[in-house]
Length: 249
Image (tube, rainbow, N blue to C red):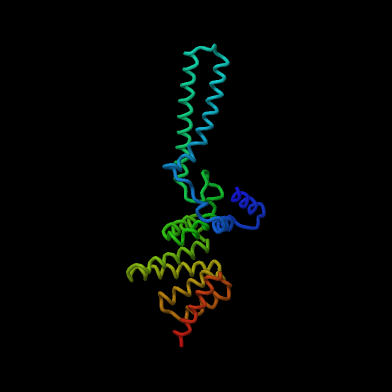
């Protein structure tokens, strides 16, 4: 209830975007609160019990109506009772399985019918959460953003950054391909938003670490710091800039 109340307050205030609200909830209450119950094992009861209870209530009402209409007889009473019980089981289990299957097709943070959770802001929030533990899923989420919003500078930039980080684990040929693609993507992001600090920071890091171009790196890193990047990025860039300056001396 406290999570629902907090989300309602954030939405009501209207001062945070969808992704900011999701990130806030994950930070305050833990990322596990955003997970969807599994559709198997004991977790399946979460989906089956509500429709089962509803079906039981409907069956009881139907049985009471039949008893009111028909004379009380052992045979006539037992038959509607069996039918009612069968309907309760079929409707309850069937409804629960349907909902569980639908939930199993969703990623964390997604709703049964889509809606706000399928928005660009929500997909970006999911990608940020996934980037620290599941790079492949994060890249896929950025791809989904770009499929509907090809000029989204955050998706372009962070997808390129994750691709470059992943490529460093493989052979030089793949690294060169990733380097060219990443630099081009950062350039595209800066065409769309020339002062975007994240793209400037990542471009400065990549051209120095992977391209060995200290001169260009210094330019990009200096512009990055002028754009007031996040604190964690700022510290990384400042320490790297010291290395870049030393390489130029």
